[in-house]
Image (cartoon, rainbow, N blue to C red; front, side):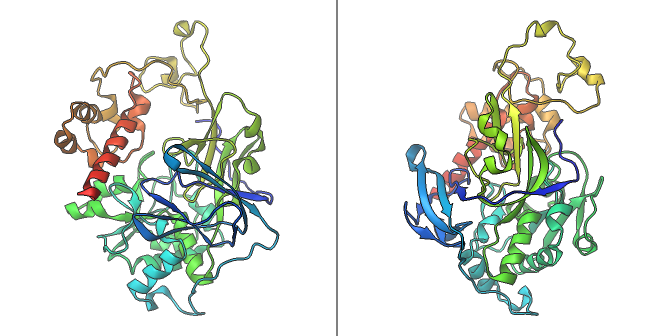
Length: 435
């Protein structure tokens, strides 16, 4: 894919407002804790999760709540904070000088992480919801890399933060008996020696080899392993920094691939996308994707970098007709099939978000099964769901699905397989929680 950033970084300029969205956080039921006109500090509670009020989402800046934008069914689409000059911060209990997380009890650590808004960064498999602090998982997985194009490599977010990362790992060891740190084994980028020593596993393969669900699929020894937790390496840095400083950390390295800027950018949670890529505000027929090409969500140019997001990618919509396209050999037309001359072109391709065809019935070609990283049969799982046979869908591996999107990407019939599987998993999870 063209547009990959190089090895350079830049620092985003100061911003005068921040934008936070609850709509882009899976599973939670939001309870708003602020209203328009309220003054908040960096670290003040913006909203909580109705299912567990201890799950707090904190303000990434200090100032005045300018507007609160609602979506369908009163979902909080955006909380806009107009920053002030002083940016006063909430203080939380921190480790004393020389103290390590191992001196804390598990319950005390959980309390600190929930009060400080850090706990929501820890999520659980297989449904990728916020982890339940009352459960001890079989293991915690820490992926260092994110192979969904494009994201910052470990060397960028670990620069100058090795001690915070190590502190975060020590804290995680109180929450689970095993902490698996997964690094890239194919072409490992330069990382601090201290980090290299704590890597327990190295992955091989392209996206989504970095996914914690794929890791569990290939390493599990027991069915209980399916309920492991995970937290990304960049968020482990935030965890360690919070324990050390007693402040809610908001600094992020975000990879931006957009017209006018292709770089790794030092910025902060909530920063408007237009502050990272000013040109997106005036682009027509382009889609802004926050969080990765495969796993991210389409957002408006006026949105902000949300809590979990470390990538902003801008791609053409691809909805313009191609004149006599069916006659062209397709040397620059990417395809899973060897139907175009692009099969002989090893270089990166320009991508867009167009389907390049209309949805048709599944033809049982098996392309989705070929690329599935956890060896389920997406086409038969989808057909089971259409027929209302949830047990059969589970037997085909519905819960093993890692929602990587590859099945949808290669489907010649343009069936949105991933979205159907994701929706079914979410419905099944809700029904389980209600029972």
